[in-house]
Image (cartoon, rainbow, N blue to C red; front, side):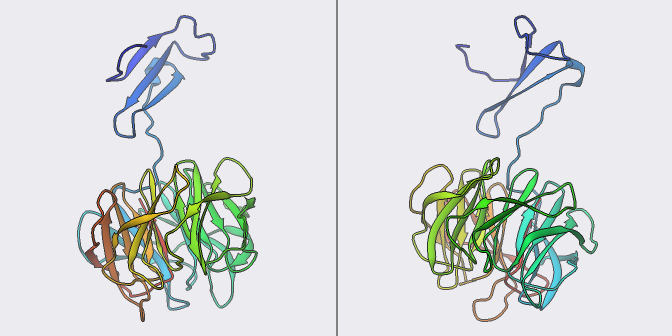
Length: 330
């Protein structure tokens, strides 16, 4: 068009023969999310701006269950204030080594070790403090898979049994998950991360590999570089452009890698503690690691900025000390 777009504007319907059911085409310039254009072919009276989906939350983080069969408590903590987390209901099951997912309204957990490997998917509301409900099953039982989240689906990748399988389940319906391709190798205890269009599995038992798979297609994952170190038991955090692996079973370092380039990860500061098996929650600007098992269960919550390479700071405590749980955000 030869000019910079500063605000939303409306184009008159002239030679836009594709339009159906509306008199105008509205184009919005989104100054918040990297300058994306959003348009809708609708009647002008019902034009509505719809912001693009982003992984990070703006209000609260959640930590679900953990530490073998010690607890089923769901904790909630505010991103904005450094205070002790509050009880937010319970999962149906006690257990650990499960993975977590987040829709815009609900948290989900899948798989885990509950007296044996599990295939259960559970769901709880971000807005009400009640016991979680059953939300269907995976096609296989496992512990230690990685969890990824798109706008409408949760993904479960790998685990200690059938460890190259990727499953997909809808947030909106309580049904058995569907197959969604495979990782390139058997993989357990990796970190699950999410961009707008892709899921990533990073690190794991005796491995530093990063793999990615498309949310939109059922195909085998592809290589996406490596972590700088072999690590398992990391917390997963995601900005809009990068994935972060926070802490591990041997280190308190935070590593980051780009979602768009296939390269080795780089150092991004440190956690305060060697908090392996902590759970990760993400706001749009900061990563949070809650709990962990450096030498026994801990209840610390730590936070770090996505934009600066510095040591994390204390951000309050969980109501129950544990590791091996799942993280969520809203």
